[in-house]
Amino acid sequence: RKEVEQDPGPFNVPEGATVAFNCTYSNSASQSFFWYRQDCRKEPKLLMSVYSSGNEDGRFTAQLNRASQYISLLIRDSKLSDSATYLCVVNPRNTGGFKTIFGAGTRLFVKA
Amino acid sequence: DVKVTQSSRYLVKRTGEKVFLECVQDMDHENMFWYRQDPGLGLRLIYFSYDVKMKEKGDIPEGYSVSREKKERFSLILESASTNQTSMYLCASFGREHQPQHFGDGTRLSIL
Image 1 (cartoon, helix red, strand yellow):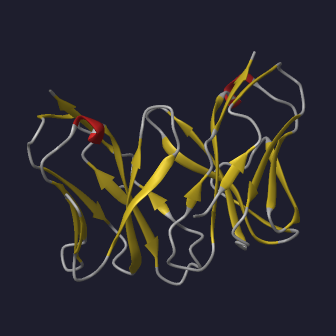
Image 2: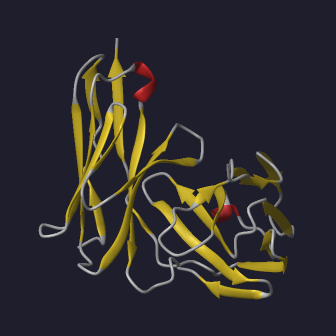
């Protein structure tokens, strides 16, 4: 089983739709969690950190479920510019941040 | 904002050449990383460094070496480039454990 698993997609949604991605992780001792966005042929960029209580940044909402070992990203009112690959990122506890695990990504296409 | 700068966006080299990829960050981060990213394989860690002159192998160090002579600079060296090292190379840094990594723009390297 992969340490971090994501549905590769692609998710094809119309503008204005709400779309949700899940990501599961296998190490129950994981400590910190992030969502990154990566555009085609560009570097990954931090979208948002994921906190235990859940957090929101504009149209984006991230949630963490430690009991079930998954994190989620919800995008409301999708825009064409949201088309990208979304990477789930997990840092295991007590590894100094040197064992960061990147998911393979979920591709999103938002259509007009 | 964290700024991670890679020396080249695109690079073309020949088999057998020694290749240097440079990365500089301006946030006084102790921790720096080199990854490669290939279609279908996601991000793979080559080497990382947690301090000046300190280096640790990642998951795929074979055929690569690194140098960290100054805190802000982390160099990746392909000792004798081969065609299977054609890839997107990404440098990243972070400050403290549980903080997210920040990436440079990436270097798209082609070995002919």
